[in-house]
Image (cartoon, rainbow, N blue to C red; front, side):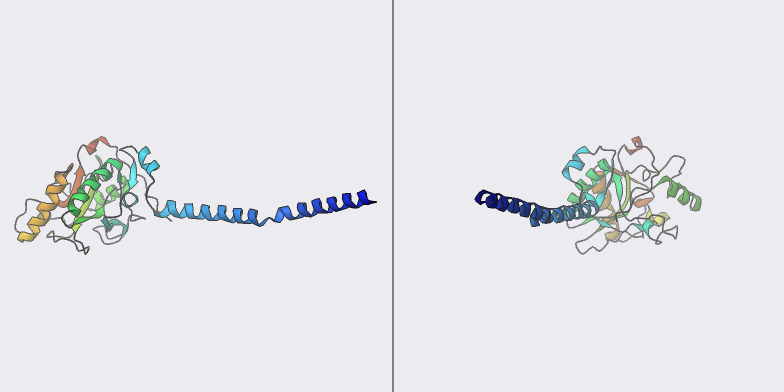
Amino acid sequence: MKYNLILLLVLVSCSSKEKKKPVSSERLIQDTVVIDVKKIKKEIINSTYYSKTELAHFHDSTFVVLKKIDSTFEYEMKYATSDNFLKEKVYDCDDCLVRYKTAKQLLIVNDSFKKIGYKIKFFDCYRPLSIQKKMWKIYPDKRYVANPSKGSNHNRGSAVDITLVDSLKNELDMGTEFDFFGRKAHHAYQNLPLNVLKNRKLLKSVMEANGFWSITSEWWHYNLAKSYRYKVSNFKTECDN
């Protein structure tokens, strides 16, 4: 009888432990943590910088979103609005995409400007060939719009349209608005106030000293040297959620 009672107590004890196991509070906590980590990871992917691992695997020809490499640039992506000579929004996103080699040179240039109290502001970066064709149809003047039959360096991810801003994010006076199609926007045009000429010279000299070259008709447009080696692209920019 004594041994039977002991055996019964042992069986009851084991049965009790087995019933408690599926509702372990430790297991529930672990499940919750897994869900939170996935959520946080998704937010990081959508809103912050490229990781060091990603950057290490990029080639010079890889297209990158500039704001995911550095946060000190300024942007007013004109073709993501209707405030442009097309009078319509033709980009779904206002991200500035460029080739990785272009991005690395822009970082160097921006560091030079920051030392004297300025930084770069972007109006346009990578541009799909389909948009280039649309521009050419509206304004077929190769002084201001590249012929899509050859493609623009914007289509290659190696050209940018830029200006400079001060520490308060005020644009420096460059004499005309962006995409002003006329002689007043040309580098050779000198009938401008002295401060405007100095501002244009500052932008041009620092850009050219760091691997970019200008075109004669637009004070805002700069190409990365030897960018003709890249192929023309026509993909649509994907927006971050």
